[in-house]
Image: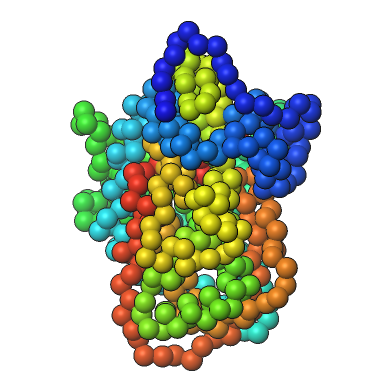
Amino acid sequence: MITVTPTSTATLPDGPTTPAFVQGLEILAGRTRAWRRLHARYGSAFVVAMPRLGPTLVLSDPAEVKALFTTHTDLVDNIDVNLGQFLGPGSLFALRGEEHRKERKLLTPPFHGRRLAVYEALIEEEAVREMAGWPSGREFATMDSMMRITLNVILRAVFGAEGAEFDQLRVLLPKLVLVGSALAALPVPRKLFGRFGPWARFAAHRADYDRIVLRLIERAAADPNLGDRDDVLAMLLQARYDDGSAMTHQEIADELLTLLTAGHETTATSLAWTVERLRRHPHILERLVAETDAGGSALREAVLLETQRVRPVIDATARKVRADSLRLGRWTLSRGQHVLVSIRLMHDNPELFPNPRDFDPDRFVGARPGTFSWIPFGGGARRCIGAAFATMEMNVVLRVLLRDFTLETTDAPDERAHFRGVALAPAKKGRAVVHRRPPRPTVTDDSATGVHDGATGAHDGTRGEQVTA
């Protein structure tokens, strides 16, 4: 329940009383452990001192989370300290209110509906090409390989072709993401170490990106065959706001950086987690291989849903109250109050997911998870705009892996979650041992583009919306 109560005094739940920097260190040192410990002590709502945000209301009650996600953005919107500081003022992360809604309207078409079918062959091609170099019978980390697949896919989807700039971006973007993720996690002063500091290094990477991409944008804008192209850049150059105006080239550059960075790391990390989970669940893996060989997809889709439930790459999403005062379920919030939805605690809720610590894909076979309970892509007006694309991409890559390789199982301990500044990744990068399978007759599988947008049927928003950025 949401009501605007201009004259109300704030009422908030309890939380730890240790010094703020101690609370922040505990969260940075072990996010999942910290969330679960606080939930066990205070219940489904508590206030904790978050790094860079200060006192933050953390929610995991399903009714209150739904109320927050469905509140109008005039009342509750994105936090001020967000990824827009890295992606630029034209990025969806930086925009709010009506500007955000208009921008989303332009960006939605390339990643939804029939457009997805255009990308499926591209994804399979990149997966086959990368996996051709996988070692047989020797353990290796899959996450770096998955990163290369998803980065190449998004580069080709965005620009439509390879070239010298493509190769430059393939080298530059991982560096930019690495430095940006570290700065997003830690409150590093901008002038620290001057021109040798992390902010200066990030600024240099961003300048290199702008130089390369603005050149590509200008070249595309001058292309007489622009209308015949089906890449994202061509679509954005031709897109128009309701008043008939076009996006500026810098706005396009900012949005492309959003797609290129947020659009590949989280998907690759989820794929690495999928490998990590399947290796430790041989009976599920055996059924999955049999289904793939028969041309099926229901269990594969369920495996991807369950992996994102038990190992969410983004474990929280934050908002800021913009109304003078707001009643949210049991609580009354003042203007400026930060509110965080714990994706981790929502996915741990036994009322929503019986035996929540178990890896049980069968819970999703023939069943669609709830829009406001299964939320690895966030929710509300800022739910991930690329959710359908990411879901289809994971489906295709996993299908290729199962079709072309035998994945060895293991009794090794679960890989811990390692916080990379934005994403939670397997600490050992999803290690695997594979053996190439002999070729088999082709079985038609057109399931990938038929996968639901996160199987939720929900409206869109933005993955990568997270606590510290």
